[in-house]
Image (tube, rainbow, N blue to C red; front, side, top):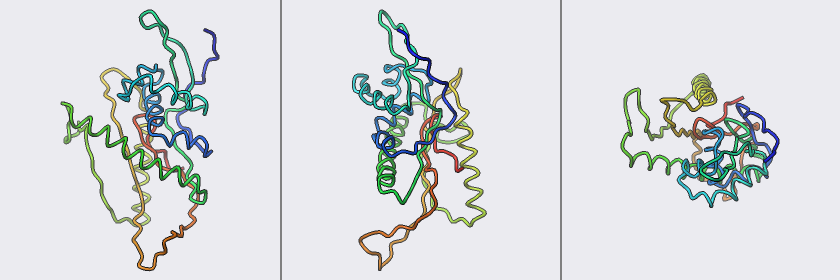
Length: 226
């Protein structure tokens, strides 16, 4: 079987067009992209094991990710008496460009946030119900928490520096001997109090376009603030 060799995954890729965002709005496709980015080169069977989903149900979603150029068919691998198609990701980490002035863009990010919450909860439950979860010490591999914090401009800058360092760590993560795979997620949002005079139609401010935090395994965790 002759096919062109796909490029090596770039460290980080930002999706800017809403059509590709719509493909990623499906939680199964995001989980597949997460799996391929975390595993590197892998087969549909590998993705099925990673996501705990039926392999046959994954193929239509894999094809959509291929059509949008987010993963590539790379090689084949002999497994038993048949050859398996292998896939590679376009990047180790993915993010999307957030534009609050674009209704389609905003709709995608709202949908994605809900889907991502469900995916992270699913992974957290699986980890909690299996032996080996360590919730404390510097070997902690299982944690869930949320906090509201007060910050000034200097503290906000410090917080974003720590987030960027975390994403740098994730961006350089690769499979290896004696390594375990962890799932990492982050949500950061402003507190918006409800006003007594607030109209039913929300009037949103117009902040500058920015990159939305994402999540994932050592693949695509939230992108850095550029």
